[in-house]
Length: 508
Picture: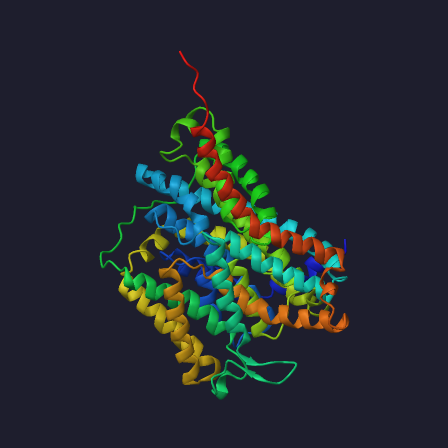
């Protein structure tokens, strides 16, 4: 009941004319940038992060909520019309969505993606309202050793899940932890890794890291593989769905929501696994015409994964807001946005800034509705945006990123750091290192260090204090499991062919 009253207060904050305008700007910008090929929600939020510096915190996070959901939806448009997923979670949408578009059903594919996103986002946000206070009440009892174990779980889970190999994920994490060490040590006052540059004594701003690794790195990587031809875009009519499309879509929407929300809330769960599971489930449950259309453009293969994708976005906000734990690249950028305003997500955020938190949650309902109203009639317009030549597009991204970062402190050092991080982001993409662990390591690294030192100080230097709490033991065990799971999976994959090869054949 208390959560419902707080949510009503959040609606009072979100429905003010100024915040409604910011929500509209957020969903429009998020969709506009998210529609562009190769730009996922994480890069969208990172790229638009600098434009909120002069906006009040509550309005800024209402705008970010719109950007987040808009960017999630925009990726489906690129996948359906261009067969170019903006992120890994949109790959499944491209499988059936692009085939639907090439059969002349682009409008129906975009419509089921938009309505499925609305349904899943609304249900998942309602689940967020219920789950967040319960997690907060549990997290209040956390000690420093528990928070350190939680950070370790985030490091290992993201490093092992969001990369093709554990080694590459951990290498990316180490880079992020090293970037987080730059600046003055808060306990000893010693300068670390500053190279004698005074501007680095306060550390590197998280906005510069996010924009450099994501936006600049992606722009350089795409430029290195650029083809000047304008991509072929499938014509789009008015987005609509017939009666049979509705009948075939509503169950996948609900099943996708049920899969997406819990996976989004898990450390390292992300949106990739539930979208794959949703696609597999819908393919298995398909009957009649749907079974025949799978692989040729089945609407269920768009409806289910898109619902799972957007439900996982709301699930991601549960650990982010209640524990300060980012479980995806986009959540890491949102955490950077909180720190930009001097706020630390966690249990105390709900006590000290309830209007901001509940206003942001309420704005998810508002932004979802705006997205539906915007995207159904404007689908043909978004398709025209895709005709922008890539050289102009990525030159604009580099210019916009540089202007936004320079506006932070008006120093050339920030620009040099931005371009150096952009080169690092390019190199990481070139050699297959994931970006998300580096960003999460940079943001959570200092927090983990502080909590580790506090725990050791309380235990008078005894390392055993790190495993005295049952919560810490469980979290560290889960971290070990996250590291070992890919190894076990690889061993089982090797043994399976060997076992098949040694099966004795019966003599005739």
